[in-house]
Length: 480
Ligand code: ATP
Ligand code: MG
Ligand code: MG
Ligand code: MG
Image (cartoon, rainbow, N blue to C red; front, side):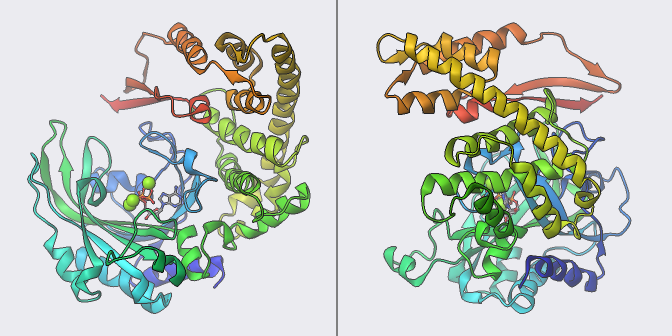
């Protein structure tokens, strides 16, 4: 089944169940300053759950473009290294605003997966909330358990804790227990490797979560307590690319027709082969993923820039350029050439790609050209630094100068140095970065109309050069 058909089957299934099909909201919500990018299907519908606005229909279905590169949900570091986390992905969803609840949500999810899509029941298992004995003192979700029992044997219903099975929007707001559907698409050979009776191996790349059903029934109040919502709602989210992986019988999202046309084009342009060598494969996955995030973002009006959301987009694009430069030996712009392929694949479902194709290509090409110049210059400067280095370690100051003054990515510095058997003074670099942060940290509280800035979060943890370099300031606002 082609990905286009998989998407429309989902939407039409819920249309038959009286849902209104709506287009994806843009990834940047201009009227929600609490979120940099839409990171879940429910984000555009937040106000309906809270009762602040009325939906057009109390049953809605859609495929929402989501971007998980900042804030609470940040999968950027996984992307390229695993085969099922993307920066941009589609979240298929069905919504009930005060209408149907658990019974229908579970029965329909099961019907769609096993009857419409024909997924073998024996590869599915589900999770339900086990309850909590903390301050919230929540009961186990026996309703969900009993409903699932009608469809699936009890050894395939796993109980999950609050972290995995109680979904919260944030510190405050609508929340409730959730039930996730996972698939186990390991080969018989792989299964045989894991001995014993454990049904699943959660850490296996072919044992993945595909769908999350949230039973929205509480509101988390500012004082931390829960109150029952006046109405109960359903919020579901299924990863489209993961669903395609299952239905197309492949082991990686990148082997579905969502990605293969892009990957073939990268192979043609770079004269490299996918599936032969780890480093090349990671680079190809990174680029095929990131071009989607950047193209959709530009189509939605969020261009790369030096601040805020635009800065995050620039960083994503530069990450792709760097992988191409370093691992695919591409020293001239080429990522913009992938936009055509993306448009042909997805332009019907997302017409904004067609409408904005030329803009997207021009912006990406220009960004590539200018960052490649930076990389070229940086390489010359780094070569000088290497020649001047006595001993086996390059100082944090030197690396910081390259990074700060010339925009040369620190992970590339580290990589090149390691190839030359030199070390980088990571601690020294981090100290310089910290100093600069303190210099630029503005103490004053800014306000914009009736929204006021509460806190400015920064990722302080040093998880790796790439993560460090991708540090962004996330500003949270609250309405006053
Ligand atoms: P995971 O545990 O795999 O990170 P999640 O629990 O963070 O997923 P949810 O917030 O429940 O994901 O989102 C609903 C669905 O969206 C998931 O069941 C999954 O299919 C899909 N999904 C989540 N994150 C990604 C991602 N980074 N790339 C692709 N699909 C994703
Ligand atoms: Mg996640
Ligand atoms: Mg999960
Ligand atoms: Mg989940």
